[in-house]
Length: 411
Ligand code: AMX
Image 1 (cartoon, helix red, strand yellow):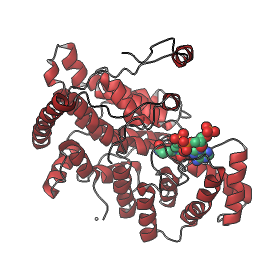
Image 2: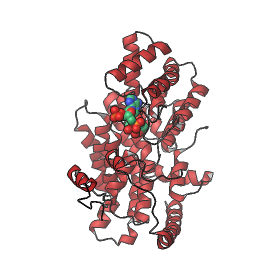
Image 3: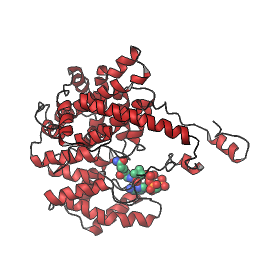
Image 4: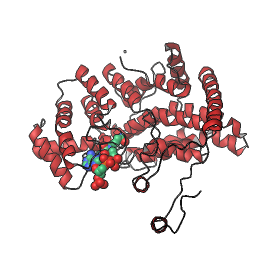
């Protein structure tokens, strides 16, 4: 773990100095104005940040920790670091086994992560009275261990729920995503390539999405990485966020069943979309809180499909939906982003390779997202970020403020 840890520490020290001087010089600079509508619309738009063949997610993890593109040897170092720490204690499997088989895989997953919290270095170090300047160290160690162990927990859930409890031991020679594919029971090189791409593109987006923000929020109270990540993944399990990947495939399967065809025409898709909207439901896989164009992660998956499986009927349906949905959503006049997001494409690729159990898809997303949210948590601790506490007011207070009778935004 040494090299990655040393480079992270050096980068964090550099960043701490930079932020201190930034705050000293510009600490009172006003960033923007907050309007009442933003408060009632989920706090969006308040600050804007500038913005084999498949990549190894370990490289992305290195980049997120160290801030520099890794050399091949750096990626190998991360892979080996994770391989050596992937052992999961038995009580975690026992906790999962205690749940009925009908339990949603995301519930099993979060319970597995919580059972693993017994291993937290941060929780132990805090209980023993660690100095706050050292918080980052056990956070970093927890992060590495947790990321190393998540594929094993996820694969265990998959094999328990869908493959008669027939488990597959890790292959210590494979990279993090390749080994995950192997433990899930998919040995084809193409599926391993898909997992590498999948684990890379679902890892991080920006800090404001529900799973990243929740992990940060819970971590801000000095919850250890297990508590913080599990909280974030409960957020990911919501249908407007990560669960959308299962919702997309479920919606397509229901459409095919209703229309009694494997390849619906664009006209049929259009009519089904309008029916969905008329029933007061969202079209899953479309729209985004911050993106205003086709999600590049959708495009990356489309490119993968064009290369490997261009004639798959489900993939073709995803592309036909892409042609059909945006103009319909645009015509409603209220949807800010009519374009597909990451979840619109992922399920079709998984189904092609035989992973048809769509309730499991969000667990794949969760394993990948650990890279982004936990790298961020390391940064939170290294920079000594404070507890998060937005001001909370009642509508009565807002009304008084409008009438000029109350100063609610004071402190
Ligand atoms: N289908 C139907 N209606 C939609 C819609 C969609 N795909 N996307 C947005 N809308 C509706 C909203 O529900 C809202 O309706 P309302 O005014 O009646 O409440 C209106 O359009 C305006 O919404 P918005 O400002 O464009 O979007 P948002 O920031 O409030 O929500 C999101 C963003 C992603 C939750 C929304 O687009 C949505 O529900 N999409 C479908 C679910 C989905 O694919 N989620 C996955 C997102 C990616 C991810 O996190 N993994």
